[in-house]
Length: 447
Image 1 (cartoon, one colour):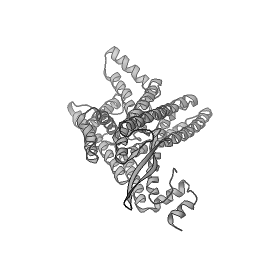
Image 2 (cartoon, one colour; image 1 turned 60 degrees about the vertical axis):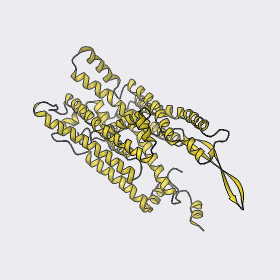
Image 3 (spheres, one colour; image 1 turned 135 degrees about the vertical axis):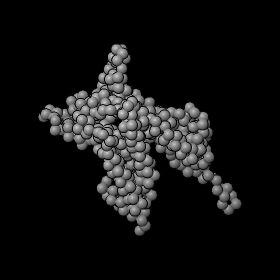
């Protein structure tokens, strides 16, 4: 019996068995262990503070401020420690958003995006360059904000404060670029998307503390609400997995000509183009979260520093409205998730040039002319199904907020939102592991 026949007859492995099969492959095992090692290094770096930090004072400041607590969750506790990795990879994500927006608008960048791997590498270099000043600005703004709230002192560029402030900002920028480098190493030599895995690691690292606060500080009614929230979370995870795997298959036929015995024969094969309902994955949620960190941070900084009455009042309103516990904040998150879902899907689709590649390979969609009509047809189908995926992802983004209002377990609002990113990263990573295993005739995690 051949190896392929034996693989097809054996029972489908469960998750644990699939993990064992993955570790049986030397190359795949090395990739997984490398990714885990990089995540461990990330967690060590997240506990290396910048010089002159009072840890107890910082912890008290973060416990008393919802905005800082929100930012701290997505840094995996690094911001509360004011470590060199306090900014995480979010300046890099912001730079990536800027480059994504600039590519269709700047002719030079648009031509680079069409030059294949070399062009993408050049755009990646530009993204790194933009990350450095963004990280410096974000680091200084966060230091000023924490100083106004009493977490740190002696932040400024005058007198004896200048050199320590510059050293602290340089340390935070260096930490961000180190994490970006770790993420790219994971993508290159490990498994999964490196930057997404670092965000995943930060969120997961902060969840035990939130869960402990939700359980240990709750009454009997609060614990009942916690159980209800857990059931809602399980339902959300199931819905995310269902929509993430949903796809619309567009039939494609290939006409090939072969010569046999001096005569030409035409052969036809049929396959399909799988268009996912949520082609953007969890990227829109990561983008929306990164952007929504800015308004409450900026407004709180203005409220603490500006003495003009109406400006201070406006900043105070924004600080309250855009708080992670406010309705305006979650409404903005919903619309940003929907917008970024369409934007990211269209950008990625245009870069794939599916219609052109189909025509070059002799493929066509039955009933649709090759070339531009094929491109327009696929675009129409993609936009229609993306409406469903975008609205679903936006609703899933705000359901944790509604659930915490229903269950009155406010301590877990942020961890529930982070769960969405965690599920998406886990699915993407499992899918890559499965692809590696299928190359070796193993059945994987998802199939």
